[in-house]
Length: 206
Length: 233
Image (cartoon, rainbow over all chains, first blue to last red; front, side):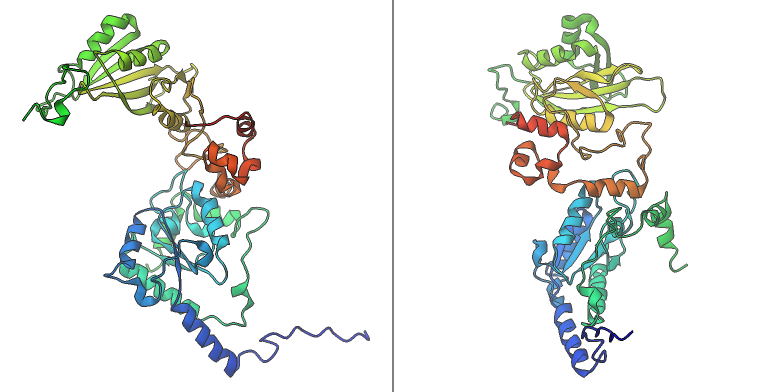
């Protein structure tokens, strides 16, 4: 009882949480990050065509600081999964995600990437959120470029909300070592029960 | 003008194929059969089980044992010249009585002919048929796909393993009627098995020999690689 408690490591929280310096720095860092997201396109189907249209001159993704497509995951910030992902590609997209440096985000573009879409069969992953963490889901089959741009703007809003004191944004999310999955197997089974995924997701506003 | 048309010129010295015609009023069943069907019957007799003409296309059902012989003859005979194998696939019917079928689509470019060969595999017999890889090298992947989807084994194929599904896939053969649409395992188990695979263990054997995924290969592939086997050429 005579021992003095070990001092807490000095973190941003320990120095009083948010103050003028950290919030202004947050704003600066987030502003620059949000407006220079480098996308890593992972296009497997027709959504990739809409993604290309988004990046082309008419919709001009460069307006939002994303003109530089990063075809190497090691220089990318945002993984845009455009299209259905078969089980055979599951370890590939998982590895691409793990090769991306923190901080990183993921956009699931289209119905197939978000839920398996119409491909409720033996070969297709029922939503890439069962393989990698997803930040923004863009609905549509395929989404129009405006839809993808809206998803990207939503992601920029999310990036602008981040605090440098939040340790979790710099920590690599580790899958459960036993199952190798990010979410519990029972949750995956429930999400992708026969017709489950699509039924659950269309009930949102009704 | 007609003599200079590149498509009408046959490569076999004078034996030009017929000029292209657009078929009109083709009956569903019946009509003139491909002349190759009669040649086949004249030469192979009982091995030709049935000749059907459906929508103007000729289907010849042949005996399983003599398939390779027939295909080789169709390819080599100067009167036939079936030089292009465009597809190998399988058919399984919903009812349990009809046999499984294996289908070969043969095309003769010099003679402008199309022939569909079928072999029936009755229920209860092993799903095996001879590979035509020794005649058409292009049959390699087509037969692998047919094996992957239907479980039909092609004897004599140099490298018969799965091509679309991954090699460790254990749920069965997806296009068979007894295969449930969503697969046999739960979604979580399917995902776990898929994620356990090494993505680099999917390349061809040559690429694998320089990759570091060697230890993750199935045992039989490692043995084959160690024995110096190469696919393709």
